[in-house]
Image 1 (spheres, helix red, strand yellow):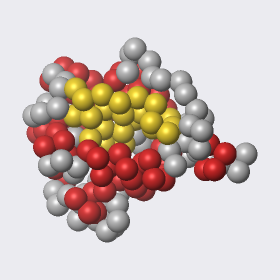
Image 2 (cartoon, helix red, strand yellow; image 1 turned 90 degrees about the vertical axis):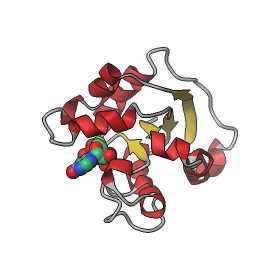
Image 3 (tube, protein in one colour; image 1 turned 30 degrees about the horizontal axis):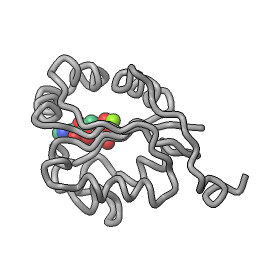
Length: 149
Ligand code: IDP
Ligand code: MG
């Protein structure tokens, strides 16, 4: 089953949005497979955002991610990568639809509350980076009530 790496950024933690954000993924029917509150250092943040290292906002982005603890999660389910991006909303909160996490809770790109993997391949890379210890293997007893088969 597909997995996505989802991270509540430091502003989301500071603003007390952790419970609401987790509820949105739980309520959808996705399964939580990994969860931890961590502070990462500059080198780790630079590795996570390596693809963006040439962008003008890279330093500000890294500074933002290391400014406080983040909640790192692995969520599993059918099409969780693409659907997770829909739940999160557009990168720029000015373009994020109301009802999405960024649409409901954010105003600026540099304070957009949450990260979600953009493809199945990047999800695998990010999960390996953030959860080198692996995630938890379990199946929700609600599985047959969420999936037809
Ligand atoms: P995503 O988080 O929606 O996948 P990416 O393009 O991967 O967006 O960018 C990573 C993060 O970098 C964004 O979530 C946002 O916090 C920040 N960011 C992206 N583009 C800009 C920009 O043009 N100005 C400032 N920050 C940006
Ligand atoms: Mg991205």
